[in-house]
Image (cartoon, rainbow, N blue to C red):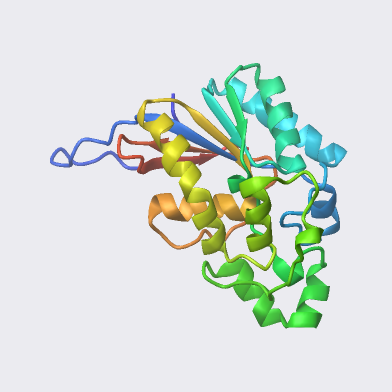
Length: 246
């Protein structure tokens, strides 16, 4: 039986019938990474999970299995902390979906703030600037001036070009714009066809996606590491209910 995040009262007899759930979209932030543990601003830095992060991912896969939530298509970013989380989730879940990774799901790039501790970012660039770029959809971090030689050697083609654009510093809106072609070409069509999709990605990109789907303000709360959010969608891919698994 499906469970809502809030208990709703029974509608009056004249109320319109409840929307019918067409499919489910599960959003999962990666497990705790080494830079999460030390509280550094990570962005596109390719850091691994901690042992705690690996355990979180395994527990979440088991929780999704216990809920009977299946997966037909699982997408992740190409950053190590997301791909490790994805693989551990699926191993614990036991499913065998179509698995893909895309740089379009990478975390937003923090520009000149990337790699800093929050106190360093506030000291160098001002607390107001730090808070705006973390909370405001359109605010960009202080810009960096990346050189082509600094791009990670494994990046090629469009992904390398995207890194060079992103490394200057992305707002949440920039990161969402980078992601939306993947939504339009792959994720939305799969959901329309009734496929159950899981996205294993990052705090900011998932918050921006939730705001996009709900046509609402950016969620204020940070998503907990490896906590699955289950979005029940109607045929127009509008969220009917959201459930955060413990």
